[in-house]
Each structure stands twice: as C-alpha cells, then as structure tokens.
Image (cartoon, rainbow, N blue to C red; front, side, top):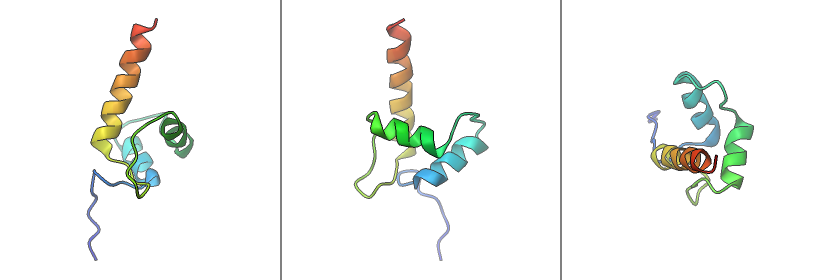
Length: 68
C-alpha cells in the first residue's frame, strides 16, 4: 500500500493536519469548508490541490489588503 501524499489531491482533513503541522493556528475543517464555499479551488473528486489552494489564499489576502 502506498501511503505517500499527493499535494495535488489532498482530502480536506489531511490538508487541515498538514496546515497545523506547518504552524497554522486557525486551520480547521470548518475553515476549509468556508473557503471552499467562498470559491477556493477543489478537484472534481473533492480533494484539494495544496498549491492552488495556497495561491487562492494569497490572492484572497491580497484582495482584502487592497480593499482596506
């Protein structure tokens, strides 16, 4: 059995775990669900591409900074 992670196809709960291990204090299943509802990219199978998600978060942050 292959237990390797594909950063291009992470289950939301795995993404939360990775974000927390990387130091996030706000990562939660609810946060991911809210982001997806707000337009964060998601693969057709329900997984999340970490690179695309990180880019989306950066854009959202930039958009929020510019609107202040």
